[in-house]
Image (cartoon, rainbow, N blue to C red):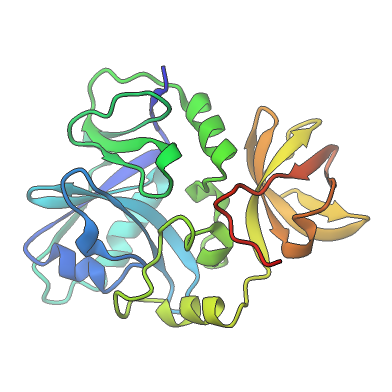
Length: 266
């Protein structure tokens, strides 16, 4: 069945009267778009515009729930808490009380879930009570790899740039919401055409390379492996390597397969 608990995902609860305004000034996307049946994908950046964490912001009547990488939840509580000042908010790591669940293909969306805002084909996500949900982590991983959807493990804290990972095409950044932390570098990267690498789906022939393994073209370093499973993966590649017929990575051969949604220079 194409439904799975995602055990590597955690939950941060943001409550209080100022929760929307507070988060709006900090993250890459427009938090006012969160509503019943509608979530928003966004990232928290350093002041220099580098990725720290990304998450799906889910609606609850009295709170916002951040569906995030589980190991990042304590960091998010601490980092966001630095900006609390006089805002009427409450922050806590609520991972123990919830399960992050995803459905895809023909899986019926339960009440309280929302369509994945990145792509219609991505399916839906929900922060649910820990009832009996199936575990098909491998099935979900293959689904998102086939679509070219990054997971938090594909990014590098204080190094990755949003536009390398498709945040513009996948609706993870707003260009007209106003200021947020790291906005200046993100905007400069877009308008000056400074993106030199992209996170791209690859077909893998041979043994699955470990994350971080160098990718080479004719002996020259052109990127690195980020994640993979069962012959599919994501690799961060220099733009000129994306159209190569084949790349070497450890003992494997990679063939880039950029998805239709990805906007690449001619």
